[in-house]
Image 1 (cartoon, rainbow, N blue to C red):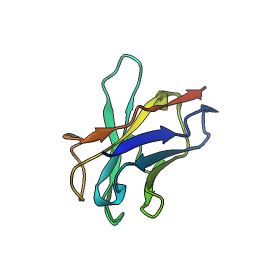
Image 2 (cartoon, rainbow, N blue to C red):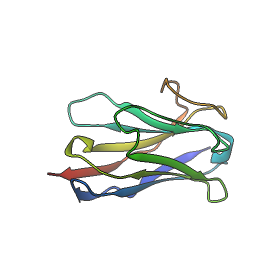
Image 3 (cartoon, helix red, strand yellow):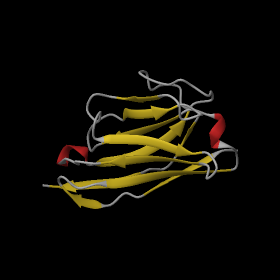
Length: 125
């Protein structure tokens, strides 16, 4: 059974960068489209970006477009989220999750099959 574990969250200053990783075990993540999500305190979880199984198709929501880049390395069974120009409003717990299909993905971020437990990103002003 597929399991996902996020890592890379940290405290960073406004304008800084972080790279989040989503590592899979128990199955082949490369079969599936994968999305990154976040949930800020007191807010609903929101989808941010997703990537098809091959990596050939990606989607970004407007709030992160141009600042975040999603990528994947199927040989390493992992998906990444490079986050640049971070803002205090990016502070949240970040999650990865997969769909039960290869893609393409977006703009709807529903129907996820497996979720990780999240990694905390805190951006100070």
